[in-house]
Image (cartoon, rainbow, N blue to C red; front, top):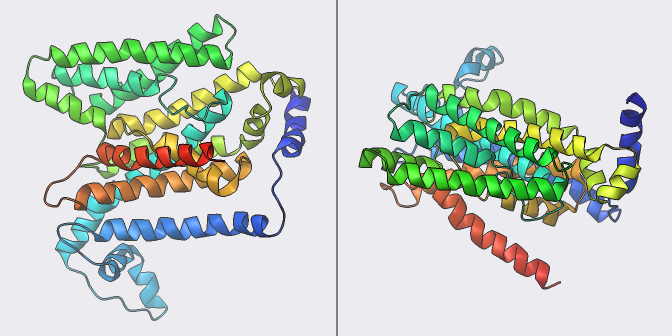
Length: 365
């Protein structure tokens, strides 16, 4: 086993699709730096905008408030913001923005992994039943009146992981191949979708049915620091592990037989990658509800910029996914002010045309 693990990395580097030197290499080095700057700008913009506009300069001062003693020690004096503005930024806006950053980054990374292991550009984070598993438990809790601040995210998280386990177990009985997993996942999504529809249609109270529909569309409204912690702890751990699997993902680009010929146990590796991705997705979905198109569109955008090498694609997909969801949430909060759209609605409205444009661009080559 140890020799296999040692040998995979150089093999993965050797099979990773090469890129032209010079300008392409410079772009690959510069883009992550630009994306990190873009993340900071997106966070500052998102925490500044709203019905009570605090402005970027005042928001930056508020965000630097915990560092005030250290800054004053080196001779940097900050103006004192009002208590109301400080509470608005730290208690309401910043948790929402950070939650969007974590969930979007996780969906971007998980979507890229799904598309790689299935070798299917239309695979998304929900293809293994993880989103439907979370949704069916959440809907049942809501329509039965058992949903609380604790039971809803916990139940959704366990439902997501449970659905993925069932998919992997059933697919494993038939060899655990990528095509089998995909078909079992589609069947699981259809089955759970029927349960969700029946639960909502027969909800005892119309308010519960409406709340369930609201959850299914995904939203970041009312995000708290507890929500950020719930999504961030397993989400960031899972993303960190996935960042170390770029070599295996590059090998999957060769196909089942070629990847297996390098010594990689493809079925087992696929199951491990899907399980880690499921944890990342479940961590976000259990708090925000089902947010679509992020995990489908973001990997395509990353490939358009950088090509197919997952050593670069994985970190870039995390950053692009985070920025995408942060900006989508900014649009949701401010586009029709005072009316607030659901974040999942905006990701669909933005993501669908972007995906169609990418498909048309690819078809026109």
